[in-house]
Image 1 (cartoon, one colour):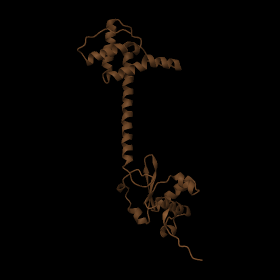
Image 2 (cartoon, helix red, strand yellow):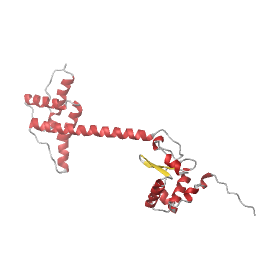
Image 3 (cartoon, helix red, strand yellow):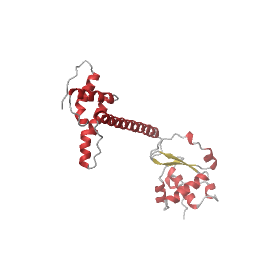
Length: 240
């Protein structure tokens, strides 16, 4: 019978360095995980399977796989780099020397497609997006603080207390009469809401108009603000 020659090609092979096989410091599980990473890396020097995936395919627990990662890292056979919103990138080395000389700063922290081909850095875009979201949140927080100050100013000018509805019906009524008009006035005046509100209350008292809630001053507020923006128009009395 003719002996069949084995051809080491394709995805059926994961050639393991002899130093890994003969290591007295690596467990059998460590070597299996190392071989698995080599197999998943193919012709690349890196692989990115999830810990859960490795555990499932090797019939191991997630915790056991993480222990193997720690052992392989400490023995200088792999390096793992975290990626935003994705599984960690694992770099696999054939010698411990190569691992020790590995510099993460020399690696572009790019996202990698399943083909292993490096794309333009999506992490940079994600970081920028994160910063943008942070800035937007800071702006929203600042707007909320300004709105609270406007609430207190209205109370100071009119003597009306800020509503504290308890039931759903009361909260809806408070929103319609107080909070929503205040927010609209703040948005309209865009930085000059406090001065416009003072002028509005002064004008309404001068005209003998009743002030019962922010909703009752909103139309006058709009007219006063329009006068400030376009002073060529003469002021008019505005009634609800």
